[in-house]
Amino acid sequence: MRSRAPLFALDPSWLFLGAGLSLVVAAALIPAFDDLSQARYHRDRAVAMERYRLERLASYTAFLGAIEDGNQTLMRSLASSQLNLTPTDTELVLLPARTATSGDDVFTDLDPAYAAPPEPVPVGSTLERWSLDPRTRLWLLASGALFTLIGVLPGVTTKPKA
Image (cartoon, rainbow, N blue to C red; front, side, top):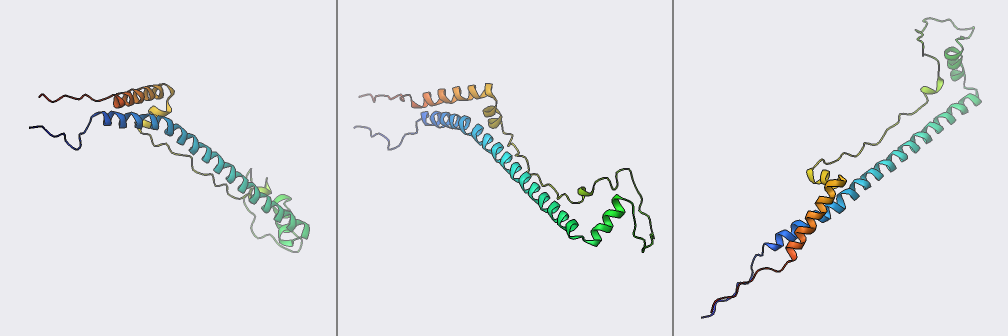
């Protein structure tokens, strides 16, 4: 009586092939993803700086427009804070405490708040560290290639005894 071959046989070489291809793909994609996240961070930082500078320019333009229009409230505020002058028809009730830096720069109150984007946070896994380090990345690629080679080698077949 002839023995029938099984429909499916689990060959261990598939495990080596899967592990080898996974290591090679990880060694190729993880540094690329890290570079992409750094590029996105620098792009977001440049956009935030541009937004900050445009808001600052708009604020300064509005301030200059108010000065050119002769806004009385602004003129009195500038005269009292920058020149230490008060109008003759008003009395000074309370003098503000002057510090060494108060009144030095009018534009500090005009500057908008700068919102910097968050820096990319690395995952910190062992595979990521190995993929990003040039020395260990070479070993990772070599071991992945070796596992892939072992996985594609032909399996051992036994001939049934007659």
